[in-house]
Image (cartoon, rainbow, N blue to C red; front, side, top):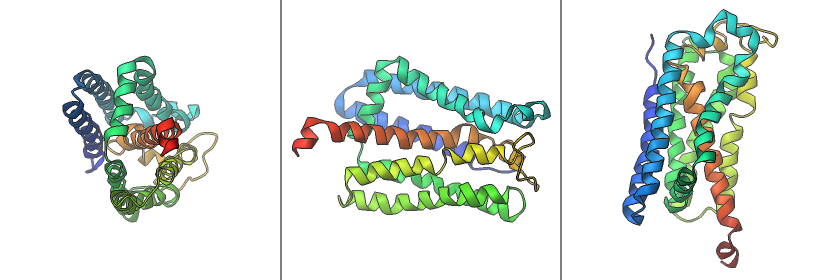
Length: 244
């Protein structure tokens, strides 16, 4: 097993949300919302453990799975697992909305500097451990978005970036990954859409511990982008914002 930053990225993502939730709970005395967010994070962490175990056992690169186009739908399971509690439980929705509303916007931008860790896949590409086509089409754009978070966070901190621009930036962060990444992953895996056949192919992406990235870390970045964008849109439509 080779060294990978992906387990630390997952811990950083969940830890950041927990920290924000705890901070807001102390400030607003809404421990009920913090408890809901904590349970939600434990749910996501448990799923992360499950996906890690499956990845370590080689489930995602099994030959008998390849005909079913796993690159197109495996991450959909992650999205469903994360969104279902949000749809079902009011306190989780309210807690996440309050988290976005009460957190300094530049913190929400700086969170995406974690995506600079895509430098790791650039290195693996240079050593022949990661598919070149996927690095060029997904890895490098993701890295550039992570770098842009430094500038966006700085501008927000100086109050020189509008909510609308920050909303659009978050949508761009999601579009860097979706819908291109799942399709490109499948095009590098044996099956009907197998186009990028040079080794290493996209099975390297689903090989543990790298598998943690496509199965939970990257979907969480996308969901964070979309969640922030949605709450910014709600804020911009609020009567108080329009009057301002």
